[in-house]
Amino acid sequence: MILIVDDSPENIISLKRVLEKNDFEVDTASSGEEALKKILKKSYVLIILDVQMPGMDGFEVAEAISGYSRARETAIIFLSAASANVNLITKGYSSGGLDYISKPVDMNILLLKVKTFYRIYEQSRALNQMQDALREEIEFRKEAERKKDEFISIASHELKTPMTSIKGYIQLLERSLDKHDKETIRTRLRKVQNQVEKLNLLIADLLDISKIESGKLKFNKRYFAFNEVVDHIVEIMQQSNPHVKIIKKGSIECEIFGDEMRLEQVIVNFITNAIKYAPDTDEIHINYHLEDDRIYFSVRDFGIGMSEEHQEKIFDKFYRIEETSERFQGLGIGLYICQEIIDRHHGTIGVKSTLGEGSEFFYYIPLHPSKELINQYQHEF
Ligand code: ADP
Image (cartoon, rainbow, N blue to C red; front, side, top):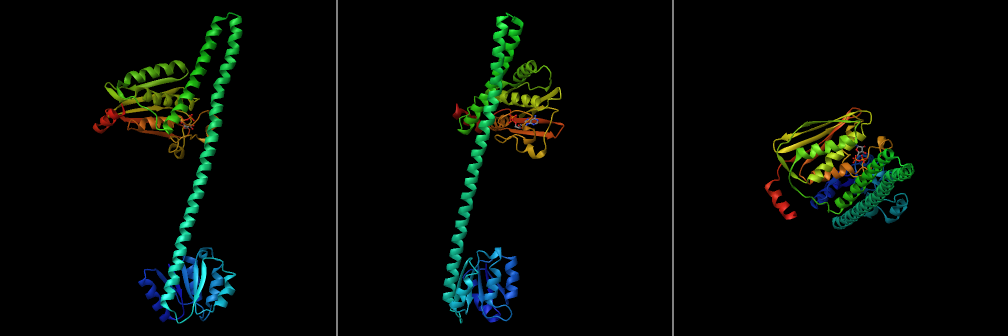
């Protein structure tokens, strides 16, 4: 937008008419004081400023606005100024640009100058935008690098913990072997097995993440009995977590279409988290049933829960709730992988939770593939 500042209404009218005819947006002020008020409120690309005005003259206006941050990019064309005077004030005014035109104004020259200033303004705006985008990109790189470093350090720590336990148990096993103490050997071997299983899960998650990144997470979908899968998982999880009562409600009698192993992985992840993030409670509830043409599956715990703000983010890669990340170990990738698996089954995943009261993780997936999906799957196989 251009601001014309002139005490003569006729000058304003004729300048305005020419500029508007050339598609410029124009605002006007009939005194220096009025112009200052307008410049305080609005940003202008260019001000056409009459030098000789009663009250504040053009130079005084230019000097006053040299300090306005809003006018940093604004150019000024003085009307009727001698070039020497213009040079005097350029010292204080290091912003958008200065020029002058003698009165009576030659409209063609004025238009030429206005167009040049506009072009410079557009170019500098494009440059600024490019600079901002570059700056943002650099920050985003930096941020990705920081996250990666943090992840490597957490992952190493997570892998080291079971490894240290395994080392310790093996040393103890050697001693038990010397004593031929079969019972203790059996207990310790079971503990080693548990730790190896933990390592195995961690490594599997890490491999899954890299497969997701490279688009190589493969699915092997077919019809299978969901009931049997849930029964099997509950039995195993109950055996390895005897202190927690896993209560199962619901049933799905028909077969469902999906990748059995991957859907099992999601259920195990939900139950493992439910046990991990509810250390002071001894019950978790599993619920599943058919809802029209899709299955609903959920795991409810009565643990630490989480606020709404976190509920939106916990499925993001590497996201862990900071307030509790010291108390509970983890990599922040399990739910991200679960989301990918459910997405690839064309389903939805979510959580309902109240801080301090517990959480319910759930997913919905279609029972059968749609016709287009069948085509797609045939393609994938
Ligand atoms: P991890 O548990 O290894 O950190 P997940 O991706 O499984 O990674 O979970 C991401 C984050 O979501 C966890 O760090 C934790 O803060 C939060 N979370 C997951 N499950 C629960 C739960 N049942 N109750 C409370 N918080 C949970």
